[in-house]
Image (tube, rainbow, N blue to C red; front, side):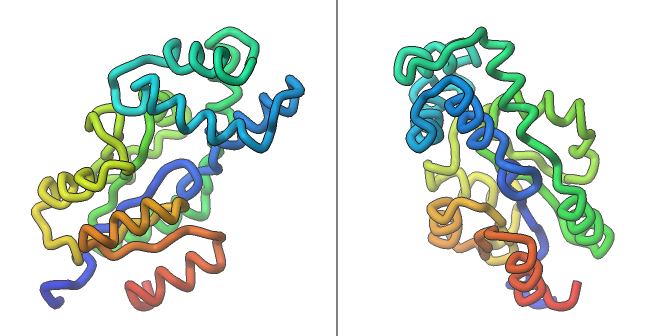
Length: 204
């Protein structure tokens, strides 16, 4: 194994390990309430940061309050949250990839801009046992929009950046990871991902 061989594989949660529940849930709510479906996901991403929720400086109530004010969204916090969480459906085939990588000796982890909702999803799906590390923006105090989060993860793993492969469905996050020296794959779909993973790791 060379000094730059991949030793750890980190996955985004929504949009990679699971269906993108945050975006899909907001689109569903907008459609049901006759609101702007096209802009609702972007409003959600802005509000989850502006409220501090995604970096642990605010709660779900702060987030939903902003969403109601900015978009006209209706509903109580618990009902709205339930729609979001229901949208995060774990991809069984992707979890099979994680299990095989771990069996093959790779360190596995999650690096996700998430909140304590990730803990609730883990109670439902019990996925955390398949990962050696879970880096959640809510507990890190910073998200992937801050490039230093990648340096923090590298330091915690005590590896060279090039030894870490990061997988995310967001092109900007992939670019920031690559700028930090990590190997990275943008998840587009299953077939493309499988081909890219094999190209990076070999026949695993």
